[in-house]
Length: 341
Image (cartoon, rainbow, N blue to C red):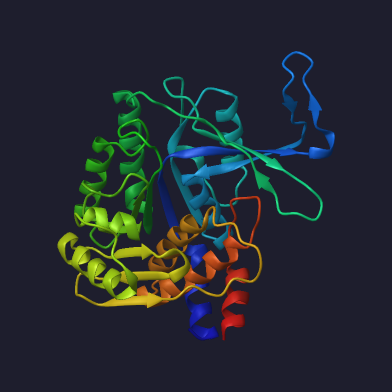
């Protein structure tokens, strides 16, 4: 992609309106100074002294963070948080983000706020080291009244948006935002607006999702087709084309160190190998940066091949950000693509 085409695509980002429907969580980082470690007089166990606490939106919020970094003009998060301290932090963080309108983000006493608490050991001269994470989740089905509010929110947003990103982050079905009833509402929107870019990702796999574009890893691709993960790029390409034809929508596959691949229902496919690493890496958030960049570029008129090239560069930026769930701006993506050229 030359510089003119890059500018043509990315200059359209501020004019876009994108909704993110999914499981927003709070990423809370506890920065620990090991030089201040003590021993508890009561238990005899080591005490980790937290010197700094920082929080940011995680889960579907990581996709949103990347959309903000790309300069998308209007962003509509659709999800929920509880009436708890973590919910207050998440709500405040979302409200402070550029271009984010929180009119469709729900606060409810019927759910607790999904939280990833990440203790990080910070030592001078070393990369941050993450200890065992402490998670807070919902383990009961999402109440019908919460589902109804979510459905109303996504229906209200649908006429005004250029793209919809769906991220199902929960481990147990029907306990988060992306329930069967909510997906049925998405299917209705997809039928009403066939031109609308809808891109879905789910950590539990995408089986049963409506006719929308799907983004997954190689293992998830194999599971959707009822077999083992395809081996190598060519087998993955064939499998992705097969799924795209069956599903009737585009399929995107992340291949870790092997790169990214996309397939269309027509049988066309595009593959971009991963860029070389430039030092220590942290892969947390790379997949969400791919999701955000694919959705934005496609909504701005990029071809599949162009969207994959941009997403590859964005993921290369993100994996080199250590101790955080990173993002990639248009300027950072341009720098990486210039290095490649």
